[in-house]
Length: 332
Ligand code: 13P
Ligand code: SF4
Image (cartoon, rainbow, N blue to C red; front, side):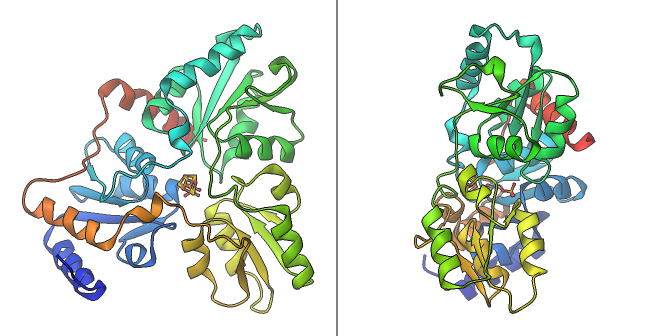
């Protein structure tokens, strides 16, 4: 089967008319997949906005933890994904690695009841469930600072998984002491102990890139996502989540140059003039890019044929505790 983009878009729109399906696309998706989304946004917006949607199916164009978050928050919905693509960072931790991290803290004399775990939304449902069962919660890059501030009120050690960069950046912003599991040091001396996961896409931005743009275009602003390394965030003019970056960049005066350190597809469609990618390497997220228009068409066709494919299923216990962890965040 070889259809043009226009033919595929038309076939998709016909099936969307016919079926009770809401197509949801993350900002990092390819342009043509982003454009067919009925709901578009960042991971948190997508999970919360689909809760109020009354279609039978959610067709989620993004990575697996995002589709899972929709299913966890709205278990009655049938969630299908054109590609079951897994975020590389989410893949760095599973339930067993999570348990090992708790054991690591226990070996330093920190009791389990004195640990408050927080997981970045970029984690699979099994990790969210473990966190929920231990009294912890989820955060996103938009609300991490607020969630950590609230968590600190409980007077416990914070175990932050899986992104070491986000954990360290928030700790730096708040004047807190952080450490990364496996690095030299005693976790008793830190407020936030971070797991050692990271996003390979956001590690592409370097100090040399920042120096290059500042030298080339005096007055240029540097805006980055908090999944970038702390030394990159410290050297930047603005650090913000996906939706915070969009707001910041689109509100800049037209003539203001800005170099942006986050995923390529999103930055590229944001502001055609005076916006630069803060890297000589194209920072595309390989797993976000896996979903094609043809995959979307085939997934819709499978629903139409009565044999849905790539449906998200989550067992009852994982569902229960992951929901608790997500809802604790939403209640804040
Ligand atoms: P958002 O939570 O901002 O959508 O970002 C998810 C992500 O994968 C960032 O790299
Ligand atoms: Fe995961 Fe990084 Fe891709 Fe975001 S950009 S989905 S954190 S691999």
